[in-house]
Length: 458
Image (spheres, rainbow, N blue to C red):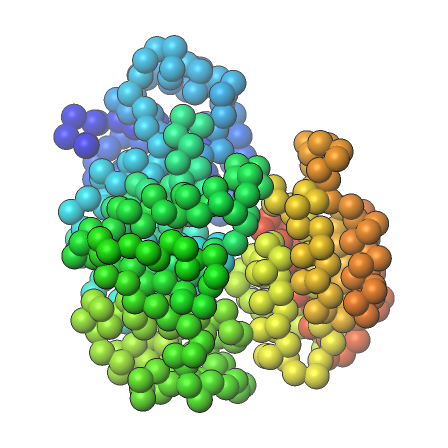
């Protein structure tokens, strides 16, 4: 694809994946330019360190050099001045998943990790198993694994491990991103309704996953969660082999201060992560690694040295005996599983859930009851003001008053607070030594973690 491409402009370059791909292409000698509406660390400094200047704001003049190719990010919509200019001038353009497919994945042995929950953890753990075993894989992950310095890397290895997102590709390609990733081995961890802004119901999501499964070649492999009722209807296929995994495969299952321990086919594993969802993630990794030629001792050796992922049950600090944890959970199931894992890690301690309704789904009433049930697993619940509520039709908005009442009916204390400062003051006044505060958001949440730790220390 790059044979005649000497310059590429990225619209929305400060996304983690966009920036990583832009930097890799610059290393290959391609002249890179880019623009974004939000230019701030860490991606702005990441790009600057690699000699890529970012133009802040979207303007038609950013295309004055007439690049050979324009990559249009997933967050860009019609009306964007640069996107409109690309269409009007008939410049060559593509989405990031298309660019990845033709530039980095084609010709590789692609392992795609898909599912509603656990993609980042599973892909990170799998990548580390391959890396620790000397396979030097390329990877693209929607988070920052602590064993690596960044969320993407492109090598000469035959292996490419990628997190397969079901979200749409671009404004001009409404298919899920993962249909571009040429899966040889596909992992399907779980399946639930999510992304209420682009999917109307579970059936539409299942259709998208069917299209993904149909891309696995006959010499490939589908590894699927056999315990998930929403996945079961998708497994009536005969074009490729299927291996199923589930908690019944993990015997001698238990938890200790070091994490989760379990056995599979007589081999013992110790995983430095907590919670049933992470056991399932590890089971999928074991099946992939075995299929690709690794043995159990190599897998366990990698497990022992796995350092986790930023924003996945990440301990941000402790002050006045209060532990503050950051987690990316924003879907009700992810919130529930995270809180249960935290309880397993800190038995007998009071657990706080501080939640920011920020995703397109949790700002809506579609998860009204599920959110209450998930948050009700905590002892103390604080919910931040729903982000950009004016963007949601009134009839579809999350009812926060009802949410508070439902959470309290489950036995938890609950508060709905308007801003980060109010949340910090509320938690600081009520938190006691031994409490664990779990901050749940898919955004920066106004830096509430550091502000809370600072306030507690003071």
